[in-house]
Image (cartoon, rainbow, N blue to C red; front, side, top):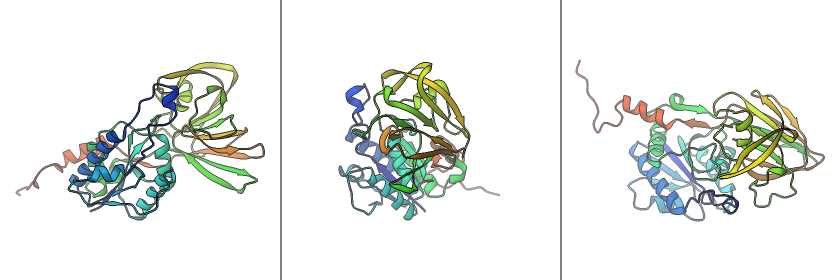
Length: 335
């Protein structure tokens, strides 16, 4: 038997981009409904316990109310910040959780990966820019997570490593090097402060490194997706340098909001190829400004193909059906 973890970000789908674009809003009631389906399905699939990450809005606890399932709250104090997700993922790793269902956008999944770099993951889209997670019904997501966590379906059969963008920043404040990561894109924004974190002004962008950039993506990954598409599991990435004199490309930096960017250069990146990137401003990770880069800083970036292990929900349920795991009673064979 094994346990399933559930992390839900109460702030996902509610940031400032709703004021400057037609981005949709994901209400707490919708998230509670998804989590409730995840819990019920994970228990049905054989998970012996469902560990819920706490949050200030108590979304997971409210979702679990009245369900016939063994649920528990991951221990730890809440800060009301992204560090709650990082801490919850690390705690779930220590607790031996077999699969984690994350509700959020690109930033939420990045935080989960910071806490547990290779976490076995089902990522459900409830954020603003959702390049990394997918739109998956909570019932199917919980069932797949439960089947993998319980050992009924092997993670090696249905799991596949996603990429990460790794970076090391060396500056006077971090002479030994500060390490960080992104799952979709890393960009330099010509700004002095993180502010509301979201990137909304295309004129401020200096370069973008993308690990995932399909043409249908939204956000900074859409810049690469329009000039050099990169699929989720192909072993590569791309560096797009912005500036005058090159292609002028229309991109959706936020859902339903388009802008023109000028692409000066496109550089494909192979796995583990290290590149030093210049500039002064703020580094944006998966669409959110997060860290200042000064004049005397040296930044090294590379693509790591060994990131979170994405559980293929459809493949998991297909194998379960083939193996009669949904039958109400065991199939017996007479020899």
